[in-house]
Amino acid sequence: MKGEPSINTNNFTAVQLMELDACVRCGECVNWCPTYDAANKDPGLAPRDKILRWKKFMDKSYGLRARLFGPKAIPEEEIEQFKDDVYGCTTCAMCATVCEVGINTVELWESMRANLVKRGNGPFGKQSMFVKLIGEYMNPYMADNKDRLNWITEDIKIADKAEILYFGGCTAELREAKLALATARVLNKLGIEFTMLGEDECCCCSALVRTGQYEIEDIARKAARSNVDGIVAKGAKTVVYACAGCFRASLVDWPRLLGEELPFKVVHITEFLEGLIKEGKIEWEKPFDNLTVTYHDPCHLGRHVGVFQPPRSVLNSIPGLNLKEMDRIKENQRCCGAGGGVKAGIPDLALKVAETRVQDALAKNPDILSSACPFCRRNLSDGRDSLGADELVVEDVIVLTAEALGIDLED
Ligand code: SF4
Ligand code: SF4
Image: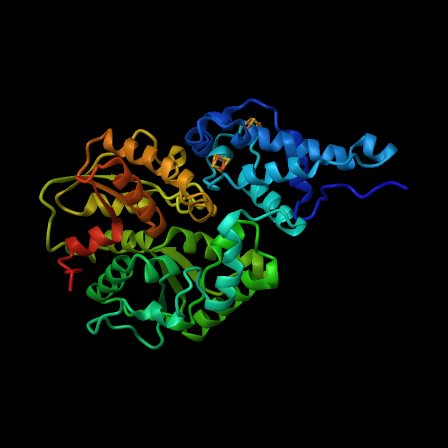
């Protein structure tokens, strides 16, 4: 009797199975992969080789020979090694951007991860805690969800219901509170009435989707449902995000998880501010003292959903800030190293990629390295610290915006 294939096709679409065959082995993706580079060109991390290895797994399980004589067993250690390698990826989408034949590699990595999670191999290391933590605490930081509100000072006005809702996100509210504070105070200062989900806000579940754990215990779908219903109950028509990961998850992952369109518009805070700048509704009160700033595109805001110009428009409009671009920007930007569960699962690799990105910035000798994502800011700050580049300020665009509006973030 023929045995069961070692690897099955769970979580792959028909298009993705064809994409495995479409790779022409040109190696362009390998030239640009930041984790392959940071891991001393470890061949296991090369995107092309992951596609070819998985295709080999599929051939052994379903190819012509398998159909005639039964599937050929794949040694467990080979599958385990593949699992380690496919998680050494920040899902930065650089390989997808340069792929000669247009393979959506990021979604392939995510499908491979989900397949391996179901098989009992994935995820990697501490990433397995995400399901339990988000299921139990509604955030991945094991914080009492009421602590989300700790950054809110008495002066901040948050309406009970409003047409605009600020979705704070776990990392900003629980780890990068200055960013949440800056966002709320900027909205207040500009006279924008907004509401928040507060302690009812649940993790956006980006970490679960990126690490292939989106089906486990249905946590990701339940979280998306709870957030969407909560946002609707608050009367919001537009949801504003200052976190690139939450923004991408809401725009792309929530509709997929729920199988429905979102009943509200989602925008990144820099898009929102760019609109106000164009309408002449922002008056800068406190110009910077002729400082040079460079901007790092978060993968989840840039390559994943195409928001490149709005953060630059905001920085360009702030008086006294001179934007000097790094060599690799926009579609070609180099990842900060934190995404795809790498910061939690393989922190050494995350740090090495961050160091390289900080070096990209240092080559332009700026005063400030800015970004538009709390996760990027954290990892770039770690990279700056490990390089000992103490003179470089790493700060979010919204914090720079707050400062130029004359908002004090220290009290
Ligand atoms: S998504 Fe980024 S890190 Fe992952 S394989 Fe592609 S280029 Fe490398
Ligand atoms: S760029 Fe695309 S076609 Fe070329 S090796 Fe990479 S995945 Fe294959």
